[in-house]
Image (cartoon, rainbow, N blue to C red; front, side, top):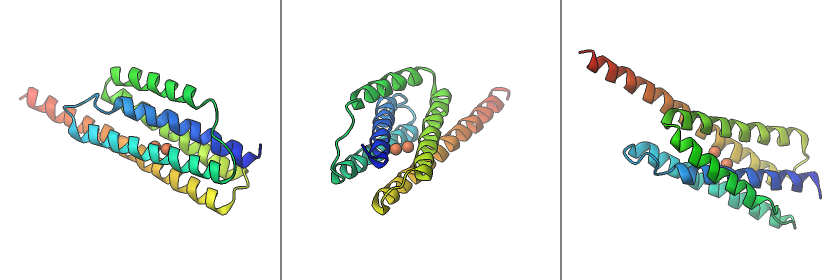
Length: 156
Ligand SMILES: [Fe+2]
Ligand SMILES: [Fe+2]
């Protein structure tokens, strides 16, 4: 198997994990409509990454990895655990997942000799992950701000 194919399959597996994490987290905080909607949007974006990687793997004559279901299951477990830990910890974990993806994407871009189309696809996906990480960071700031306001109110 070529390095290109190995890299695409590896990323496809990690996208399956991320998609499942967001799928499980969506709806965990129904009272927080904006957060719920954003998690759902992230899930759709990760699904797009799964689809574009799978399409590229197949265009290059390969097939997706047999380990995909394992990654999906791991994502489900991780999603369930993190939603129990509360918004803050959940978002911090999501940032870590995104940072891992960004790191992997950059590492592959640095060492694998991709064709132009695969390279463009990976760069686009990595850019989406950067947006996700930034968005969760903004949410954490917002929650912190809200908490300070709340404490101010309680202290009269
Ligand atoms: Fe992704
Ligand atoms: Fe992402």
